[in-house]
Image 1 (cartoon, rainbow, N blue to C red):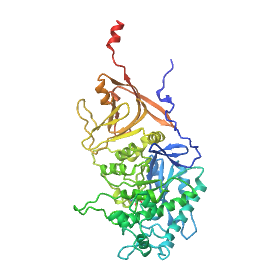
Image 2 (cartoon, rainbow, N blue to C red):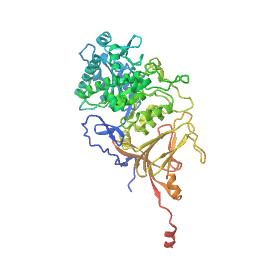
Image 3 (cartoon, rainbow, N blue to C red):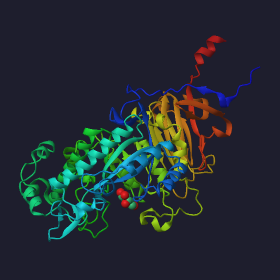
Image 4 (cartoon, helix red, strand yellow):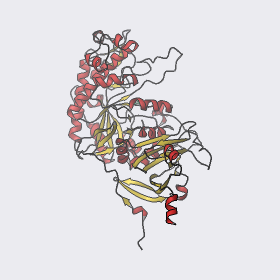
Length: 559
Ligand code: DGJ
């Protein structure tokens, strides 16, 4: 008798991506029924990203960055390109660091998202070349209401815009020449956390003239505004709305100039407006002080969508410990006109739950910031957070390891709107995920005793995704949780004896798009739900059926 070797059982993938793109297609975004996916080499691609530190795109620091990226199991590295480095003198370009990034990423079999540190970096101008910094007459700065020159370039200056466009277009032209046939670079971030730190807007004479001339017609029409002055249209937000329109317009023009050379997807990362902690009645945010004014923060999204059509994604950087704020930000930025992408976040206890939550809300990618920190001294202050000693908290590496193989399937399932997640919340250690033909009952934390509520975890680490593969077939993954399936309550009400039964639960992995079963799970591994612990949890495909109803009449007839 032939021995059945389970590990060799290879099942064809049910999810051969249904995309018509050729493998030599430029990386692009695909939209289906308000769901999105990145398509790379003709296939859906889930960005398991990691961003290196600001000053790490250099020969001396890249080796540490690649090894940090590899140990996190990422498939994409986000790395800056510095305007001051590529154009040290006006009109002369040096792409040595860019070439190094691309070549070394290929050696490490990683994709790249390049971050254009141009006119804006964290609401300031620190990466513009010296020849711009030292010539504020030609390249004007923002001026505050009280006449101070800021380290922020004016978004109301054509000279500034032309200089940035010229450099960015040269970068994109160069990328096309070295990478159009390889697609190592899959997406571009245009500027970094744009907006103005230090003033709500530019109060220079030129900017004031523009402000006084009123709201541009395209904005009036698209947002159905009362035409007229900025103050009439936007009330107390007039100054920031003006800044948002001209900042978005500037960056949209930079992106369009780059796309005219090489049309990769382009996004802007966002320093969004965090909730204000202030006295009652003093709770209006203070743009330019608490966050860069005019950037694509929550309230400015509609203005940005009108003024910067070449920007495909407004992508929030998330640095808070507040998971309900994360859920709000996801709800704000995951829109039919805006794919969800989290380009920066902390590598702390919240990483895993937020990553799963984002996946369950259609994210095309996720990325912790500052992965190549070598010493605490170089670590940004907002990156330091220690989990309570007792809890074993999965690191970004654990999370990414789980999704590295099935990334294309996950991206495809999200494009089809077939993926959902549940994350543990305080007081909600048991939750249901409603699927078309069944409910997934998710219980967080172990041990789980019969008849008792699940205990949850001390640091709210429980999280799962459930994806619909067939009417009663699911892909399930998670940490610190068990998952079982039941018929929807509405169906059980009508037919209380109707039951679901597991036909087969397989632990396995996707290799080159094909599912490989490692073992069949049964007994203690399925009787009280599929078990996902905090260390190396499995990826499971489970197939169920509805047990036929017992028919008394049929039994009598047979006697
Ligand atoms: C957000 C910025 O976008 C990054 O470049 C970096 O400065 C981090 N903040 C630091 O935490």
